[in-house]
Image (cartoon, rainbow, N blue to C red):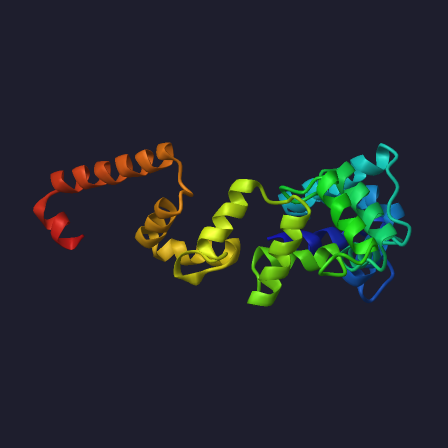
Length: 239
């Protein structure tokens, strides 16, 4: 649907006439809108013609609001592609910090990331104490590919105060592994989607669930069973 709207918009010349007098109007408009100085014009055009998905439009408007408030783009951000490359693969800590400052001002930081935590990571990289060379490399701690990476993530988090005492105790109890030996949020969420009883038992055994959570889950199971008991015989047989 959006592609159709883009073709229609190109037909009327596009923002700044980027689609006029060219054999490749789409590529020409992408190049035009990649230039940071054309950002406001292109976002306004895209909004008017429904050319961006809601989440893309929201992010673009946050970037514009940050620029309007006087927050500078990282030095190497000459266009949208360059900004993405620079901030996803920063060459030094100064660039990391400038990308962080802009993302913070624009409200684009991932959940759970704040200035204090980021600064600890930046300092560790500067001082050679970090197990990874870039903040982006820390993303693998969400779903460690092997035991070595997992241990590096745990050691760094413990040394820098990213784990509470309760979380450290839990790691000692479980050895850092969840039900079915899953590791990381993504692995464990995937596993628990199809092994709910095992995961519930694991969480109860290791004190991950509060008494309130356990009671609410028990009530839910009781209610489901009650409804099943009252269901017609044919329905119960199918279940």
